[in-house]
Image 1 (tube, rainbow, N blue to C red):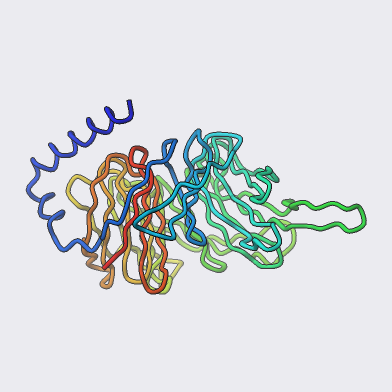
Image 2: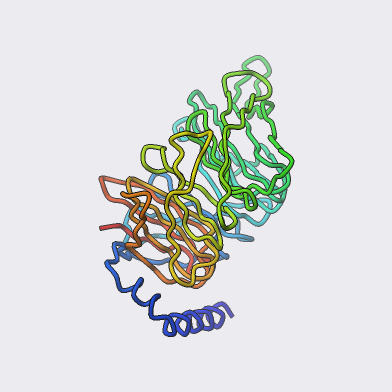
Length: 350
């Protein structure tokens, strides 16, 4: 069944591309994306992360699919990690395998769940079924800070710490320090943390920037700095240019570059909207490159050396891209793409 669906989708894409000369020009330009391999997952691949040469893929009803990507040309399926519900995206946190306290943060159908990896046990939960994205920072000493974007609850912030109680012989994750920031409008889709600053993609009001004081006990004080309304519906955000520019996946608005030198008055300075792109949903950035996906068309690579004039430098057509992860290993930029029909697709950048 999946093969038939995939064949039909690829046929439609081919017809669309064939009838669009401008689109063909974009595809045939200098393509810096170098394809390495593709591996099918047992479920419908959604969001992902990569840690220690291992890809963790939110695989819908199949939980988390774990794939060894140490050899980019020959990735190996390792196993499925069990979850309590259908999964949307995932992050690895508290990266301390020697102590056995590394956890998986997983957005599932009923909100965020975190699992202790060494024994596959559920150790906490947070948020609602409308959660769509998260970002996490390891604080050291078995402590993790993460933020979530939720269409109902707004921005969720939680600090969780692994506690060893030597008196009662208990070991557990303390998730008591948490808060939700819910303004008059929620509909947050994407979140990116950068020190005390949090960047939020809002589907109706564009990019919003907050400053959060994480040093206090109890609730975290929040200061609203500035926002800029993008022309489309902001779905995701990434940072480039040493944190002075935000890249926004703006759905029908394509790829937007926002100058955030002054976080109180961010402003759109650059736009890249390849022909046929009308559902930009995910974006990642590294060095002077940004990568974004259109929900039904392709993965795109953009050179943002000049933020006011981003240039398309790579395109990869795919039927239903869903997730994106970009990192650098030994000076090589690696791009990991998930697609509901293709599973995991791996690239480097020349």
